[in-house]
Amino acid sequence: MPSLDDINLFVQTVRHQGISSAAKANGLQRSKVSRRLQELEKQLGYQLLIRTTRNIELTERGQWLYEQVNGPLNRLNEAVNLMQTERMTPQGKMRLAIPPALGMTEIFSNVIEDYVNRYPDVRLEVEHQKQAIDLRRTDTDLQILPSYIGTLHHDYVQQHLLYLSFCMVASASYLSQFGTPNQVSDLASHQLLASRYNRSLLPADVEYQLYSDDLQLLIRLAKSGKGVALLPRLLVDKYLQDASLHEILAQQNFTELKLTLIYPSQPYLPEKTRAMVQLLRQYFDQDA
Image 1 (cartoon, rainbow, N blue to C red):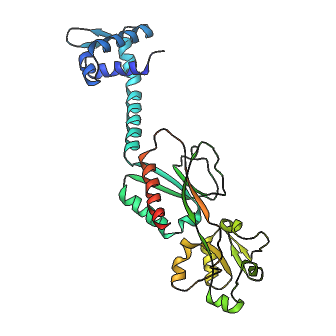
Image 2 (cartoon, rainbow, N blue to C red):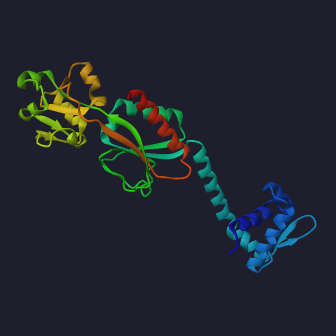
Image 3 (tube, helix red, strand yellow):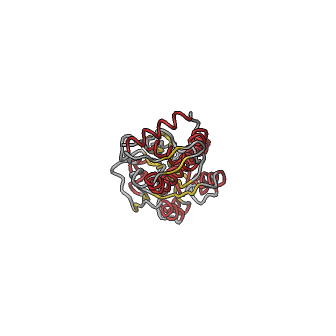
C-alpha cells in the first residue's frame, strides 16, 4: 500500500507546480522527491505526472487522484497542526471533574478565576462528579477524587493534591441547648450531621441525625442550630471567624482526607492540562 507521506508529497508537488519547488518547501533533495514520486506511481500502477523541463503536468489518473486526496489531506494537516498547537499552548476545551465539596470552596473558585484570566483561549468545563469516571470515554482532562474512591483504570496517572482537614462545628444556640461534647463518645447524645466525605472519620457505631452529600445543606443546618457537623475546614473557616459556628472537640485529631489528581497517561501532556495541574498545586500548596 502506498505511503501516506508519498501521497502527501505528490499533492505538495502539484500545489507547488514542480518537483524542485516541492522539494524546497519540504526541506528535501530534488532527487529524493523524484524517486518517491516514481515509487508511488509504481505502486499504484499508473503514471501521475508528465515531467517537462520547467514544470509538471497531471495525467488523467493524476488529476483524479489529486482531486480525491487534496481536500482530506488539507483537513488532516489542519487537524495535526491544531493538535500540536494545543499541546504547546493552552487552548481548546478543558474538562475538569471535581467533588461537589471542592467546588464550594473559595480557594477552588480562585483557581478557576486565575486560570480563565491567564488562558482565555481555553474553553473550561467544570463538572461535579461523586464517582470515578472513564476519562478517555468522556473526554475529561482531569479529575480530582477523594482517596477512598478508586480509579477506573490502573494506567491513569495519580498525583497527590492535598490532605483535606476536618473540624467539628456547631452553633452557639445548639451548644447552649444541648451542651458541648468533650469527647467523641459524647456524640451519641447529639444530633450529628454527616456526609460520605467523613463517614470513615468517625466511629462506626456513631449514628447520624441527617446524612447528605450536600455540604452547603449541612453548613446551613449547623448554623441554624440543628446539630453538630464534621466538615472540611476550608468550607467553614469564615464561619468560625464570624462566630456563626464554633469548633468543638478541637483536641480530637480527625483523620485527614486525601485528594488526588487523576488524568490519562499519555506521552505528551497537553499544555492546557499541565497549566491546570501547576495552578492547582500552586494554590493548594500555599493553603496546606
